[in-house]
Image 1: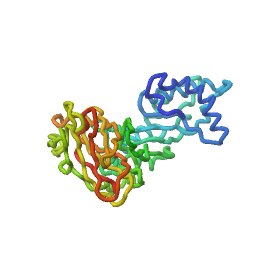
Image 2: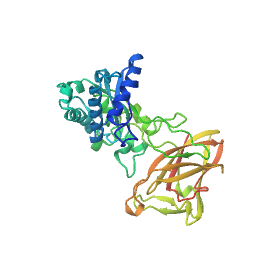
Image 3: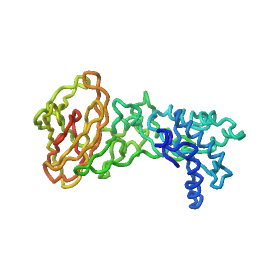
Amino acid sequence: GFNEMYNNPPPIDLTPAEAAIFWGKYVQPAAVANGLILVSPTAKNKDKGIKWFADFLKQCYDRRFQTDPCDIEIIKRFAVHEYENCESNRFEKGYGGGSSELITGLAQQLGNYGGKNDWLTYLRNRDLWVTETNCYWESTAPHLDSKEQCLRTTGQKWQTHGSGHLSKMNKMANVERYAWWTVWHEIMKPNFQHMSTKPNYLTYFNGQLTPIGKAYLSPGNPKVDCEFPGVKLYARDATLTGTAELFTCKSTGTQMIRRGGAFKEQLGTVTFAVNVPSSGNYAINVSHLTVGARNLNVSVNNGSPNYSTLFSTGSFCLDGGASTVVPLELTGLKAGVNTITFGKLMKKQMPFIEWVSVVI
């Protein structure tokens, strides 16, 4: 079905009325013609998500006798996206069974709409496909990195998250399937601008599991190793030029590098020497801190830089700021010692760098 139509106002997203028209004209006929299970547009246990989906069901019900009918009875499963709730008990409260917050919220919105008195029965007879989920939005200062999401989904944050929402879904009769978003991050290409880099991947590009990937294979298992792979190279191990300098971050108690990139119309670069066993492409984990989204460029062996945008981690070091980790995929490393340089040719200041590790 349609993807998260509750996030933005029209014309960015479809209204429920528009969605019902397109559903009857395109989506439903395609599913019927190919013998597919018809899954609903995305729902979510939040006010906007519940309201949009309930209104879609109303509009679809009203169009059941149109030339291009929209038939709610053919919708056999409800699709759900959930990025803010990895707590086992809270997830069950939100989505578990016919008395969940999702089902009761939809039932309240629908009432006896259209003279239909069995909306609640209809809702309870639809199992869920959780087609996208992760823990990224449980925190925004900073967003949760792969290690932290791993801890929350393997029962290693038991006091706050129990066994985690994946383990809980495995036991929920009304959750038929679920999928993590997303599997892997594309390789960075020279002179290519990545608009955003997030830490939600199950694997690095070479197929090696991230901490989240390990958790996904063993949800609720507190023995999973959630540490980032690779030998860490700390801020003190880097070669600095220009304005780039070491300092101790008050809130984390660790050394970081600041004033890399362009600072007061001067340039500072940060270079790590890394040793890899064979030529090829490698992922690096980058621990960083930034207030506001900032670009970070990376060049391998003094080649052309490529760019990513790293999201804000919250506050500066004097205000309780915390670092987080994102993976970047690099090309063109050779067997032996290589240089990885941050800040080359940048026009603005880059994020603070705490450490990096190469995934081997």
